[in-house]
Image 1 (tube, rainbow, N blue to C red):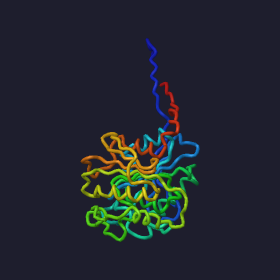
Image 2: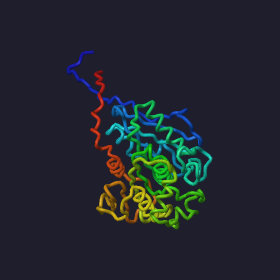
Image 3: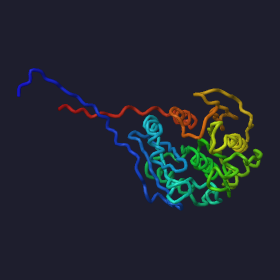
Image 4: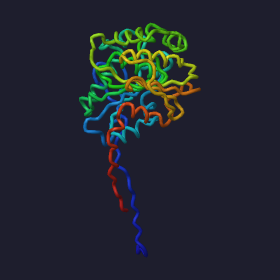
Amino acid sequence: MILKALTVSVFLTAVNAASLVDVSNFGSNPTNLRMSIYVPDRPQPKAPIVLTLHGCQGNGPDFFRQSEWPSLADRYGFIVISPTVSSGRTWGPGGCWYTEYEDVLTHNGGSDSLGLVNMVNWAVANRGGDASRVYTMGWSSGGMETQVLLGAYPDVFKAGASFDGVPYGCMLNTASDPSQNTCATGQLIRTAQQWGDLARSGYPEYTGPRPKVQIWHGTNDQIVSYKNLGESVKQWTNIHGISATPVSTTTVAGWTRERYGNGEVEAWTEPGGGHVPPATGLLQYVVGFFGLDQSPPQPPLPVNVFRP
């Protein structure tokens, strides 16, 4: 066949093999959690690790894929672990994270918190993760578990972001259904010292630096009361030994952001906001709070050029 004109079709396709994959046998896993991990194609040489925690009835893969975490991990070169609770718990097949028992609240005590920390340890040992830059965030039950981890494992997590959660220890010995207990409904009010002492009890021997905490909540949350934001502020400002009076108040993306001390604690309030996962654009502020946006953005992926 003779061609009157030569047409060259060039197809550019990014060489992108990164995907969320499951890992088994990552260490002690008392509550049979499922580990799913995402390592970008171009991770930092010692990549930070972000542990993301879904809400009740959710699962890790969906929580990850339906968020901005994949694109943010690709851009800044950090690892994401997005686990799933075991089946058979309350509130459906996905269930909720354990936050109401002594073991999960205690350093090396077992339960969900130990399994989650062992996922982090596995990523450090097997995927080049940086043990000095480990972070966690979660929504709803995952936001509650985030604060559990910050209290029980301050030696592991450098910072955390809790969306629609409650203070560390607030759910202790309460009903699993958030709508049926005094904690989630905002009836559990304590002093800053009481909340701080409770968080310190998770690892009483620990004397090192404490993780930074970012707290997010909507004022019209009908599942987990907005009052828990104020109680969380009391707790973590006490933990850091700083005033519970904000040093600055600004409006960002429709939210009111209050900063405490030298930025060790931030409280974000959405006027009229309900009980919903983080909206598009908000996770960038979490990444900024964690300091992950200080890493140079990863260069574009190489491309394969096909000339049929």
